[in-house]
Length: 193
Image (tube, rainbow, N blue to C red; front, top):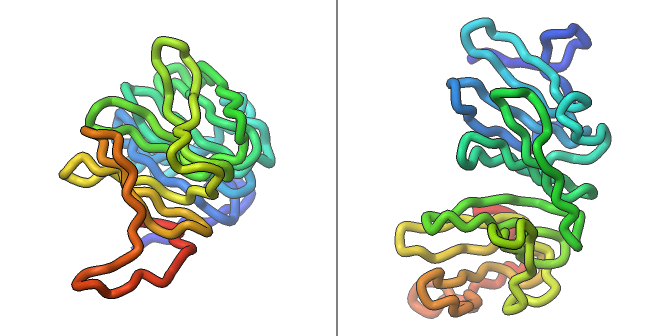
């Protein structure tokens, strides 16, 4: 087990609270920190490269999640929306100023849809409009995490409304009020799945 910490050197990990980890297209590992640092770890050299300023991701915007979708890194931030970063060119490609700029999670489903969980609800990327639109069925809810299971159900972890899912085939919304065998799910603050 090797522990990596920020020690101030140019090739060290940046940030003290790592919130996001994602595998890259060339076996590298990308990290995002609460302080807003985007770093790439090269496992062969065991070194980090910081891309925050070059990536166009403002320092200080907490990176909450990273997803590798179609060779691009999609980066959700708490305070500045979503950024798309090209790891091959080491540059920012796009910035999406989602109405709720406080993003917590990002996920691409088996149907190729990209969802973002935010402080104010769930948003889906519309490829034709090149923008994010809110999924109204959930209302104004703080979404911490999203995950698709093998039955094409998009599970949603929220702060205040507990656990729910959307059936991606029918678009039906299902709040989870009862557990297995009628046991109640009494936690309304679910932060990840």
